[in-house]
Image 1: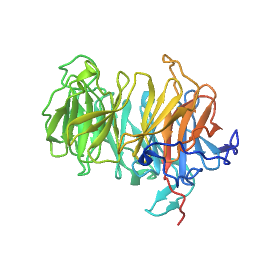
Image 2: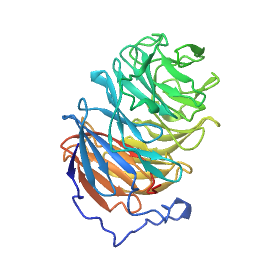
Image 3: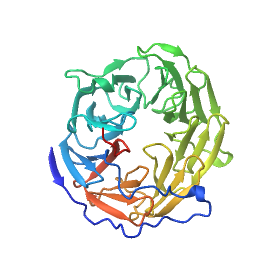
Length: 403
């Protein structure tokens, strides 16, 4: 690894922290928010052209480079926050990275230095990545299998992810991990043309079917779970699958016509999820009341992401405008222009991640990350990360407390 940058490219302005005024005080950014990021929070950035991975410490501005197996990797943080899954879909490989930060409720322990783990996943086109509790899954589009491992195995030398064969046809699939240890997984019966699956069944870790599909849809893409419910985007409606095998469809809003949610995001609120479609916008899905209500309606959304603690929703428009919403109330917390505009047809677009205090935006053309303070979005810092940043993930914990 190599330390390549030690200072921000511009200086933070501390003299005037202005919190945007709101008519409803419940909609304001919490007044005790710090002007600095947490000590044990990290960003991991992959590159489109080079094998390099960049680990960014937002508090200090320090950037350290590592060499992954391949470029253009997708990045995902595991449920515990300590590790990242690095998915090389076109190279049939999944590897893992360790931040070294282990959370213990009221403090963080440092377990060695940041480094790659020994665990590898070797499978055909690993695409969909999920992590809950100690468990890690990928869905392998190339043959319809799943790969399984535990976070506790990441540093076990010679260990590879196990293959779970549930008898599925190959397809562009997805899965969810329930709190009881079972998995909801898509299946394709070829009732519609194309690569999308039509059904969801529940299996155990050996691939045995526990509950068969109850509902056939006109195509599924995108899913999330709160441990009890798994929610899938579907052209026939929002497919809700319970851990006990029960299934139902929640209708889309009446003005959706042919639009449907191709992305489903988890929130910190049990039974509530975010559905996103570029054709309509972002909506809150409540599986307990079977309701779908708008958070922000627009056909110009470029990125739609839930915060690291899943309590807020950040939306970046092609115009460069950013909007932050509270997922408990759907209230707009703050908004403003944070980056330059991006043409809609652009192949490589800015990616965002957000914490309680900042939103981070990749800049593929300049090789930077823009760090924007949420309590004062005019306060921005550029951090250099190689030449062509591709994907970004948060690692570690929103804590600055030592042992």
